[in-house]
Image 1: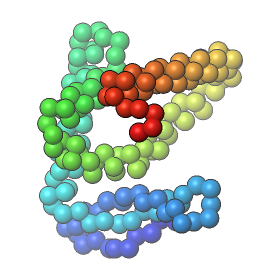
Image 2 (image 1 turned 120 degrees about the vertical axis):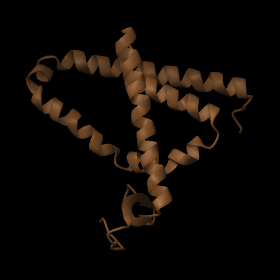
Image 3 (image 1 turned 45 degrees about the vertical axis):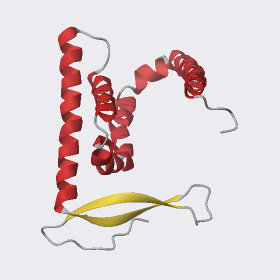
Length: 163
């Protein structure tokens, strides 16, 4: 399923970008990974983007821990990144490649959560009813709040249902 169409030399940097193949007959699109060779400039932009993400997360963690705020540091870091997008127009383009790679490999970040579930299975099985209730209630609240925010945003932006 994963095919590499190029073999890099020692100095070339590789990146795997997911491309969805919608021509297959299955229900889900087939995920095909293509091999791309990055230029030195792209590789440098990726390193700078990762450093920016980690720096904003560190600042968020420091503020959250230092002031005792109940907001997680990574959430504060994402808020700072959003502020950066608003202030600096070309920041989105500078981090787009790195963000695409991180999103393509997002499933790897769920492995620790799965390990945690397996490790604490006894507690989860003992409290499954409360966990299920919270998941259902939390999902319902999220759906309602999302619908209200979309309606509010559409009203502010002057978007009709027909648009």
